[in-house]
Structures are given as structure tokens and as C-alpha cells.
Amino acid sequence: MIHKLYEKLLERDVLSHPRPRCVAFVVSSFDGTNLEKFGDLIEWSASLGIESLLIHIGHYSGELAPSLESILKETPADVSIINTDRSIATGRGGISVTVSLGYGGKKEVTEAIRSVLRDVAAGLIEPEEIERETIERYLRFKQKPDLVIRAGGRRLSDFMIWQAAYSELYFTDVDWASLRRLDFLRAIRAFQRRERRFGR
Image 1 (cartoon, rainbow, N blue to C red):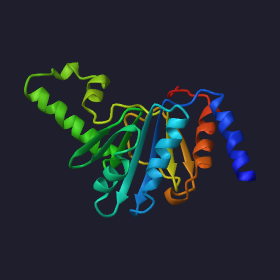
Image 2: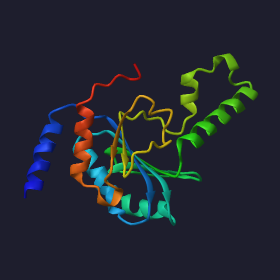
Image 3: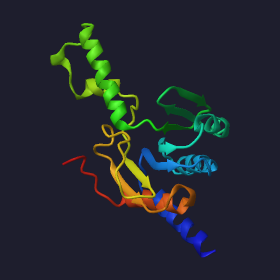
Image 4: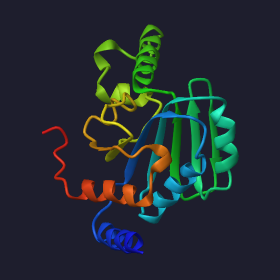
């Protein structure tokens, strides 16, 4: 009872302040259980008015993409599931959700640079024309998260290392399986209490 009351008060506090537009949620490893947590996280984000949610799973066992596609196909969201081989998209409107399965930032930036070099070799781009914005056009993920939440650890992830350069970081010791809406609300409130400096 007290737990639920605290969660309601926390939610009221969070809703009374500007929320992040884009949130990235990083999970180092996933054992294939608690698939319903993906739907929960999408629902929690949508209820707070978050426009874009990215979920990155660093390591996982088994064929996770088909299972995710099955469980999220009825979710009221535009969902994209991306791994190193292919992308799956299901669109039902609402919050934009991208799930990255093992596709880290080092690989993403490496592939982007290779694409730029191919276009330079083809004469489509002059070397002196290459700017920061040029690289960004070739990145697979176009979002720039306001907040990156790292679940179950204190180490940084390489997910979206380019796009998250000025993101606020929040670390929680709560792992994926134990994550509650209360924990998510705490992360959002912590973001709201910070003064963003964007690298300054």
C-alpha cells in the first residue's frame, strides 16, 4: 500500500515537470526471460509522454528477434527491431520504439565511416566536405537521447556513443528482471533535477 502511494506521488511529481523526449535504456545481457518487461517499459514511457524509446540488449541467448516481434506486434507503438543482420518493423502508431539486439556503437560508427569512404571513392562526396553532420547522416540510429539509463551496472555501454555524447546518464543497480515502474520514474525524476550542459 505504501509502495503504491509513493509511486503515485512520484508519478505526479514527474508529470509536473518537462520529461525527456527520447530515452535510451541499456541492458548488458538478457537471458530470454521476462519478455513482458519490454511491453511494460513501452507502456511506462508512453504514459509519461516520452516520444521515443530505445532499448539496447548487449548480449542475449537464443533467437530473440522473432520472440520480440511476436510479443510486440500488438503493442500500440511504432516498433523497429535491429540486429547485425536485419531489421524488423511493426507500426501501430504511438510512441516510437527501437530495440537494438547486439548492435553496438563501435560497429555502427565503423559502418558509417566505411559508407562515407565508399561515397568519397565514387565521387559523391569530396573529402573536404566531410563534417560532423555528414557522419550523422550515415549512422543507423538518428535519435539523440536526452537520457540514457543503464540497468544493472555502473559501466558505460558503447550503444549510440556518437548520438549520446551530450545525453544525461543514469545508472541503476536494479537489473532487467527486477525493474519496476517505480525505478523508471526515479530515473526520470533524476533527469528532471539536473541542469543539462550539453558538453559545456
